[in-house]
Amino acid sequence: MSDNTLGEYLRARRELVRPEDAGLRVTGVRRTPGLRREEVATLAGISADYYLRLEQGRDRNPSAQVLDAIARVFGLDATASAYLRTLADTSVTRRRTPRSQSARTERVPSGTLQLLDVVALPAFVENRAFDVLAANALATALAPGMRAGENRLRTMFLSRADQERYPDWEHQMGGMVASFRSSIGADVDDPAITTLVGELSLGSEDFRRLWARHDVRPLGGGTVRMWHPEVGDLELRREKLGIGGTDGQLLVVHHAEPGSPSARALTLLGSLAATTV
Image 1 (spheres, helix red, strand yellow):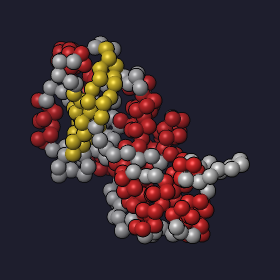
Image 2 (spheres, rainbow, N blue to C red):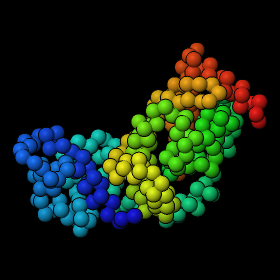
Image 3 (cartoon, rainbow, N blue to C red):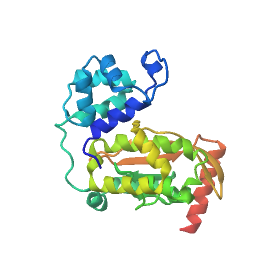
Image 4 (cartoon, rainbow, N blue to C red):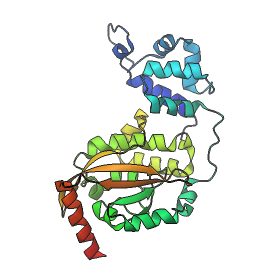
């Protein structure tokens, strides 16, 4: 991966901003998608040469004021602005342990493992790279990718069986890639992350297109529509809860509105999963 992550991010976001959204009057044919570099510089109140150096990676320590001005020009929200500051923060200490090793040795707290066994809802634990570290039987029954040892990005983009569980898969995949960027932050040069992104880029045109956008979204929960071959359609809430004392592990739980058809479908799925154990 390139070592100019800040420049790549600036270029990707610049090309996605429509001139009219930045308050510019458009006349004639524009050969450049989005904003021109000199337009960003003018709107941000900095010199065109300085902005060019930022994109080219020749200056990697912009001030907070410059970053805030560029974020305003690009219309970045709080999450994307924080991500921009992370990329530009040369004081951030990058992890030196390859994630390919840490994922194998990363341990889920015993209390969380016990919770997975007793909670009557689909639940699993994932790390910052979206590796599934532990899962209960109901989660695995709900979707193949919710199984210990899987990587949720890999299964979502490369496994047809997993994609079939999500009727609005095309809508969900954009948010998943954006959340992945938010999760790994500046660790894009971690060897395991590099390998995963390379594999997905070669195997999925959709992933390659979404990764190039450099979108960033918070790691929050939300509503997810799913389909199961034995219990049918489900509309579930997905909650992501941080696990204390870990390096960013999350407990992911799916639940349905009480008394709803989805709640009854989850109950039936639990009964079916119990008979197959």
